[in-house]
Image 1 (cartoon, helix red, strand yellow):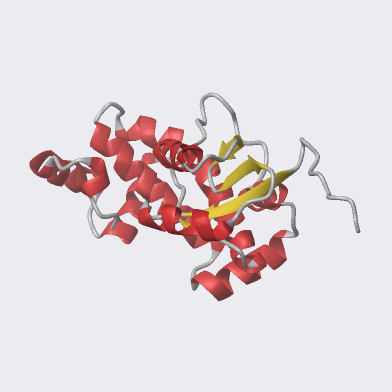
Image 2 (tube, rainbow, N blue to C red):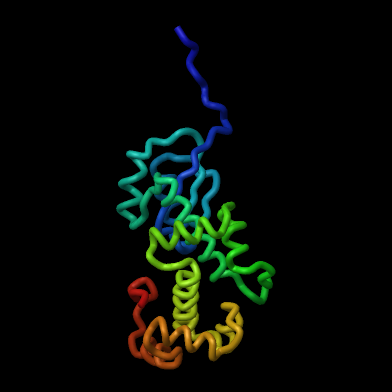
Length: 200
């Protein structure tokens, strides 16, 4: 008879989770896993480390109820890593931390893989290039900052790393069909809560 295998106290499982895009998502996922009795060791966008082995069958439905999804396919994990790297890139504060790397170098460094292979994989699965995805996320962030109404367009364009207000305005119009000024007026008329506004 074989002796019972004891797990080392340091044994952990890393879960890769889709649709975690903000701090509120981190809070919800952490709380839900703790309610299930898991010891959450660390949690960042797209990734949770819990103590010991886990029963994915218990976790999956709870995540899905809250709009999240467990990622078990390796290619899907890589895509999610790229998306999380882009979110970090877009949400970093240009004033606090000047960008020293090109976007491609930054993403390759964050994901830990060659950019060319990441770019090919991303385009084949998502039907947009990583560059197009970065633009879409930057415009979403610009929309968010315009809704808050605390920064001028010039401050927003600097914060998001645009070379000029004109560059931001051109991309904004191309993606949304309206200028930042028109979008701001529309938001002032709507005043819906942020989580009810469907991204364009």
